[in-house]
Length: 220
Image (tube, rainbow, N blue to C red):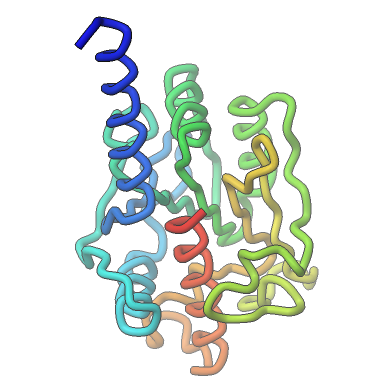
């Protein structure tokens, strides 16, 4: 096998393995960001969502809670990263480069604003993609129509400033790579019932939308 053919073959193998990892990997993680914000908020949320997905949309996700730093190469082990909290996010240059490469390579990020993150999210993600802005996602976008249909977009789970719930996205080369729920608080809705005492029907909506996000991230 000549050198050029060998390199081409290795490249194809890498693309196949990486694509398979993104589509079929069975681990997801929460991002440990810097800046003082409570990245560790909602400790029962992601495990509850994983359990719901495994029971209802036939995933086989590891129920162990995984955490990853934005500077870590381990980012690339996870097809989807969750970001949540109430306060400041700060990404240094190394964090920014790593997250940009992660998203360009097929990774996906879901940000759930518990309350008070908006200005920081928009500031820091502008570092990752200076030429992109968060856009409100059309209600007919596939992320709202996976196993569960949300004809009116992201559901309203908790009241904050009395604003309507909105789903924003970053689109890289036409592909949604980051979903940001604002004034919705999906991740609070994933928490165990005793935490916020949300009614079952509201928690069900939050979990269904979360399942759609995971399904979209795994298959697109």
